[in-house]
Length: 235
Image 1: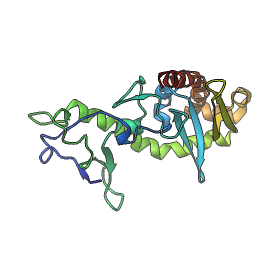
Image 2: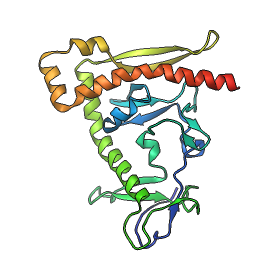
Image 3: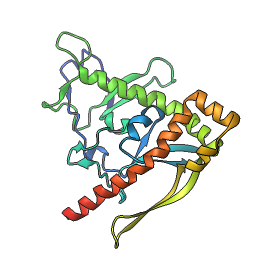
């Protein structure tokens, strides 16, 4: 892995292919998601929470088996939305060793998508960012800001008592059952019973809406089951 900071002199002619695939880390049965993308995510994926040490993280469920992404077909996603952690491709945000200064876009020169002649340009012929680089910049901005705000956002839902630990049991067929252990979901009954200052605080902060969206997203598990069944029928 060789991340370098992008500039319009050294990388004026550089092209990057936006394709995905298992070779680029897309073959995973869950994807980290952030507060700013929950509205888009919940339209397509079920959102669950997991404790990682002392911190809560939110994930979109992508499959049931290990390394299974039911929304991935060859080198492209079949979902209408792709989580930002996967949409960033070979790009990342880098800051100075001391953590000071403006975060800058870096690209991994060892990634097979970088330098692909069929890829998209990063810069316009006569200067300025090309549309693809503008898109990448927006994705990285979402990630950079979201990774800083997510811990406090999810902790607030937990402190309000809205997250309940569950083990999801999913019957794909009469012979095949999957369990998704050690997850937390937004408890609809606790959400409905919320009142007073906790309710007001979550409403003012915008987190109440995120909790409602995350709770509603669990209906997408049925769509995930349908994708798994279709895959098994093809085998």
